[in-house]
Length: 281
Image 1 (cartoon, rainbow, N blue to C red):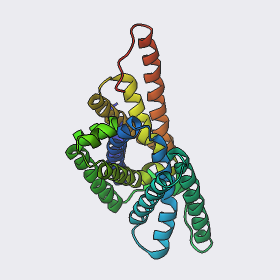
Image 2: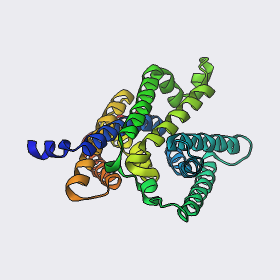
Image 3: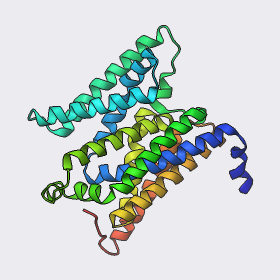
C-alpha cells in the first residue's frame, strides 16, 4: 500500500501535479462555501467560461495567460453587475447571457488562432494537471496564498455579508467592497483551477465540496473545514486515479468528488430517518 502511494512521487511531474491539486482543492472548497451560502453557484460557472477569450487574447498579444484570464473574469463580473443593476434582468439571467457570450467569443478566437498555431483546445476546457510546469506551480501557489490569507483576514466580514447583506450594510460594513473582493477571490480561484480541471469542470471544484460538507455538518466554519478536506482528498485521489489508470486528471478528480457527494447524500438521507438535521441557513 505504501509503495502504491510513494511510487508516483518519484517523478517530478507528479510532485508538481500534487502541489497544484492540493492548492486548488483548498481554495476552491473555501471560496465555494461563500458561493453556496449566497446561492451564486452559477457565478462560478459564468466566470470559468468567461476565461476563454482572455486566454486567447493573452496568447495573441504574448502576455501571461493567467493575467488575460483574470482580466476576462473581472470584465465578465462587471458586465453581470452592470446588466443586473441597470435593467430589470435578474442576476442569474445576466450570468447566463455573459457566460454564453464570452464562451462563444473564446471558442471563436481559439479556433481562429488554431489556423496558424497548434493549440490544444481540450487543454483549456478540461485541464491537464499531469503536464504542469514549475512556473505554473509557483503561480498557483501565489494565487492560493493570496486567496487563503484574504479569507482568513476577512472571515468574519465575509461571513456576516454572506448570510445577511442588509444587516452587514446596516452595521456599517463596506458591502460593495466586500462583494467586489469576493468576486475577485472567485476570479483568482477560477484562474488557479484552470490548469487542474479546465474551465468546463471548475464549477464542480467550487460547489461540490461545499455542498457535500453542508450535508455532513451544521455550522459554517465546520462546513468550510469539511469542504477543504473533501476538496483536497478528492484532488489527490483523482490525481492518483489519473496516474494509475491513464485517465484525464480533471474528470477523474470531479468523478471522485461526485462519488463522495453521493455517499454524503445517502448518509444524510439515512440520518433524516432518525432525527431532523440542523441547518446553517
